[in-house]
Length: 201
Image (cartoon, rainbow, N blue to C red; front, side):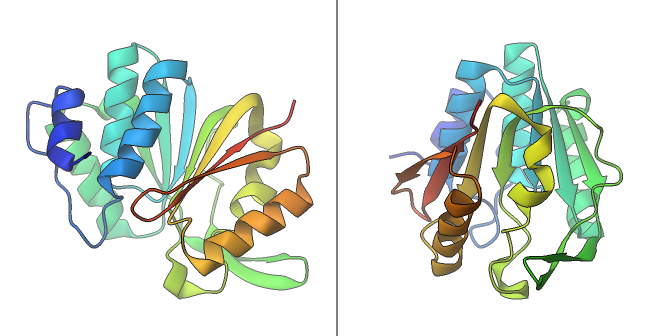
């Protein structure tokens, strides 16, 4: 069984991981994305919502000797806390937390609140981790991620959607597969569910 402790030991952290059971991504999801990062060594990683996943991915980049994490975060307090944690773990050169207030956008005649991407560097994305915005904010809250970022994805980009066991996330996956039929989808029965999509060539 994967726990935060075993994950910490696997990645050789020298401090206890700062997790909160209600808000941090589950340990098994973090293990999935860390395995991918350590194996394929993506250069540009973008994540939607910062936190423990930012530390995990930054540590993987450090171990790989390559890669940088850009984390979009709408909550100033969460952004500040994650930046502080990156400093405490000496990982600031491997991750940037971007202040990304939620902005109104319209997709398929439906309004959403989604992260501002004005400060996101114009880089080709090799790995995309979607764990926000929070689902309680709106229906299918994380749907805009692919429509807004798909043109930035590299040919070999892999997309990870957390909380994929929820009804909204399952709806989102169905819509994404309809919108982008070139995508392939794998579902993993993690604690909260994990969907993995591979970008088409």
